[in-house]
Every structure is written in structure tokens, then in C-alpha cells.
Length: 138
Length: 339
Image (cartoon, rainbow over all chains, first blue to last red; front, top):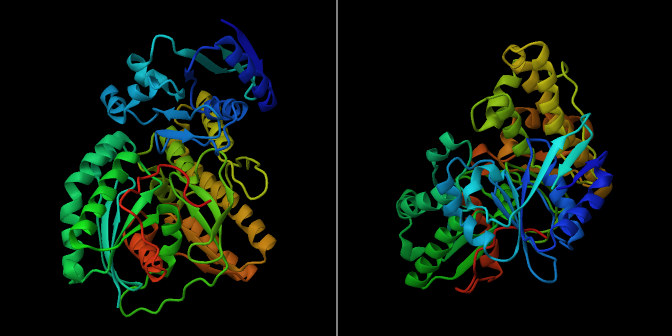
């Protein structure tokens, strides 16, 4: 476990690098944090670092966004904010995506806890000492 | 006269429409009330409901239009973007229908169709339509973009949200205030009785003509959190002023970039599309700009701003004129569109 502090969005790229280095084998990443914590913002930085060229936006409306641009595969970006029952996530095909071997970045993973593979890399994002600061734990 | 059947099933509404050239003969939509209790559209529920709705909706669209299916010239369907399961229902039905009747199949892009909705005429109507080139601000729950429209199918996104959509900001702010879904119309209604200048919220910056709303959502959340510490009834006591102030901020962000884009391209034909164009604040701002900036503004009737098949049929009509048909191997796409 390591804890890293971001004082501004400029720190996110460095933290994305640390995260990928800490979990070199992981494909499924779960991002925990309340609304406004910066989950989508961090995932955008992570995607950019991985070579994604598509526009990374909030998947709240679509539940799943698919991004391309990486040479060796796609990135799936999930947001289970609007899911109420586990069954709904199953019906979206969440498990097939998680098992696909492609990168999966998941917002609001609490709602699909039972579906997450054991080897899921968990990232917690919390507000720090002021509203601009974020504490990353992974 | 060319008769086109349009089928739209990209999200939660199943819709079918018949147009004679650009004149709408019918536009039938089955809305899925089932999502209200979930606070949003649930993809799997949506695709199941589409399967139940699609046959009756198309039957009714043909009946209302008074056009027997044998007289149709082509079938147009939404190929994307949207929810995959929902798109599959409309795509599969359109293919089977076209095959059965030996009709040309035409694919339509949902985002372009929202813009082309400006060209739909009602019977006995001769409405003024935007002249090319024009700018269209498309604002909905899933999209916020400024599109430079050079011709019916020559479109370029010149600005778009880099994070949350404007409609999503309305919906999430409503959820923060514990207001019912969908939040946009509720906030719009409350805003009418509120003071838009009571609470100043920040305008997040994005480059060029792009938008950013994520920071506004976060500062709204933090503002309420801090205010609730001093007064647990803060939201209840101030929901009108909160709604009015938030709405004013969102609209002013939307108008700012739209104005910059209009000046940059030297365009005064300005259109709005998408569900958020029903917002009273946005409509007022557009009227104001018409007077202040010399714009000629175009806001479609509400029934054409939400998802509907008439816009798919009108897209199909313009493609039919160019004999731009689709093969039966066309698979739906979930993202992208104009680009």
C-alpha cells in the first residue's frame, strides 16, 4: 500500500505512473471516492498516459465507454453510479468485460463488489486537507 | 414524394416516424417509465423494453401517417452512438424490415440527426431553416458539443465537454439536492422562483471552444456540504435560489463558448439541439443573443429535441437523395458519431 498526495491536477500524471508501476500485472482497476473526488479526471490522465487518443468523458450516462488509441487493445471505462442492483451490472455484461483481459477502469465499484475479480487493483481517492488536495491510496 | 420510415432506439425511447420528403406525417414514441424509479436509464431494461415496443410503435407510425408499408421508399435507422443493447434492437428490426420489403437501408448518426431535426417541417408548415454554414450547440444528458455544420453531412465538432455533459450536471446537482429524476426539468421549474444572482458558482475553464462542468459539480457539492454544517435545512430553505444560481451558471458557460465560436467563424446562424434546449434559461439566453448579437437563432419544437425518429427519417431522406445506402452487415457503434 502506498499513499500519494496530489496538490493539483498537475500531479496526476506522476501518480498515474506510480499506480501502473505498483500494479504492473493488473488489468482491472477499481476507483473508490465520493462524487467530486476526481475519479473521472484521474482516469483521463491514466488513459492519456496509456496512449488513448479518444476523448475520455464521464460514462455516467452510458455506463460503459470504450476508448481506443492504445496499440495493444481497448480501454473500458465503467460508471456504476446509476446501477441499483447487482443483477443490472451482470446484465450489462460487466463480468465478460472484467474477464476480457482488456484494461477496465471502474467508477463506483462498491455497487458491483461481488463481480470484481480477486486481482482487481483498488485505488482510493479522498479529499485531503483542503478542497484542492487529494490523497491516493493503492 | 419520397416516403421514409425512421427508427430510433439508441437510449430509452423507442420511436418510429414516417416523413414525406422533409414533412413529418407521424412521429410515435414509447417512453420507458420504468427508468424513473432507478434515477436513470438502465441499459438492459431499456433493450428489453425496446423489443416489446418496436412492433407496435412502427405499426402505429405507419397507421398515423396513412402510408402502407409497401409505399415506403427506404428505411432509416440509428446506427449509433447509444447503448449497444438498445441500438441492436432497432438495427436488427430495420434490417429485417428492409429485407422483407426489398427496401434500401439507410443508417443515421444519432448526433447528426439531432442537428438535422432543424429541417423537419410539420404538415402545411413552411418554417425557416438554418442556412449553411451554421453552428449548432447540442446539449443533452450525455453530450455537450458545438458543431460547425457546413452541409447536411459535413459536420465538424469544434468544441465539446472534456468531462461531464451539461445535462448530467443538472441531473447530478439535482441528486445532490435530493430532487427527483430527471433533475434538469425540476431545477428549471424551481429556478423560475429563485434569485439567479444569490449564489456565485465558478466557471470551470477549458481550452478553445471546449467545455468543462466537472469542477462546477464539485464546487456545488462542497458549497452545500459547508452550508449544511451551519444550517441542516439549508437546501430545503434555498432550493429555488440554488437552482436559479446553478442554472444561470450552466447557461452562461454554454453561451460563453458558443459566442466565442460564433465570433471566430463569423457565423450568425445559431441552432440548439438536444434535450437541454427545452431549458427556459437557455431559450431566454438565445433570444437575448438574437437581439444583442444579431444572431438568427433556431430552437426546434420540444418533441424534436428529445430522442425521436423524425430526425432519423429526415437524415434518411437527405441520404436517400444521394443514394447513400447501407449494407446489411452494418453493426451498431456506441461512441463517436460526428468527427
